[in-house]
Length: 96
Image (cartoon, rainbow, N blue to C red; front, side):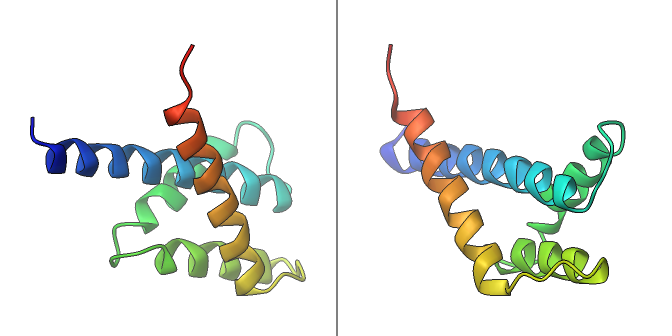
């Protein structure tokens, strides 16, 4: 594998894990039960394929939270997404 291929594979892992965590975070704020969370997490992860970048995930989560009158801005959703991405990158770089 080339360095570029490794970087692309890693980026995909980071995005997938970030979106998974974002789905859990948002689903809990939406008041979903544990049995409902997997389906919602899948929706959030699938939303990332609508366009390049994280905007599609941010808009989906923002709209979903707004639909149940959760007072949160798109900027706050993006900030949460970035914090999750930073955490995931740290996890991937951690060694035993």
